[in-house]
Image (cartoon, rainbow, N blue to C red; front, top):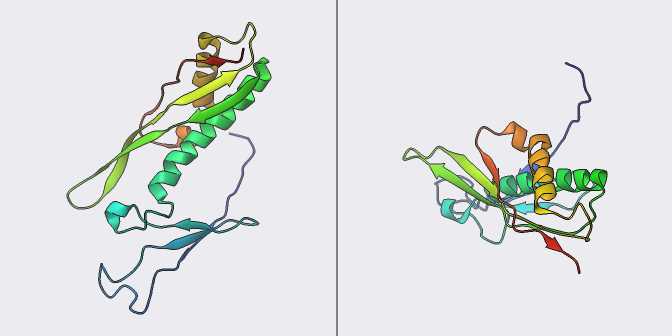
Length: 161
C-alpha cells in the first residue's frame, strides 16, 4: 500500500483544576484548551450532561462538526471538478450518541443535512448534486474512519435565478 501520509498534532491542556484538582467528581471543571499549531486556542469542555460548560466546545460537537466539514470540503472539490458552481453550502448536521449504564458510550449515527445553492445550468439538478454528495461521502477521510453510519440527507437544491 502506497500513498502520502499526513500527520496532525494537537495539544489538549486542562485548565479546570481550580484549588482542589480532582479531589472529587464534582470538584473540578471540565474546561480545557485545544492548542493547534499557529492557531488561537479552541476552548473546550465536556458536554453539559457531563458537567461541562455549555459555552465551550465539547468533543462530541467537534466530532460531528469534523464529519460535516470533511464532507463539505470534498463536495466543493468535486463540484469544482465537475463544473458546478456552488454559491452557498450549509449543513445542519446531527449526531446520536448512546451512553450505557456503566458510563461508556459510542456514536450510533450522524446525519448530514446539506443545503446547497448553485448557479443555473445543465449541472444544476438534484440528481447531479446527489451524485456529488454520494462521491463526497465515499471520499471523506473522517467518515471512512468511523464504525457507524454517516447518512447524508440533502435538502432540495437551490438554484440562483
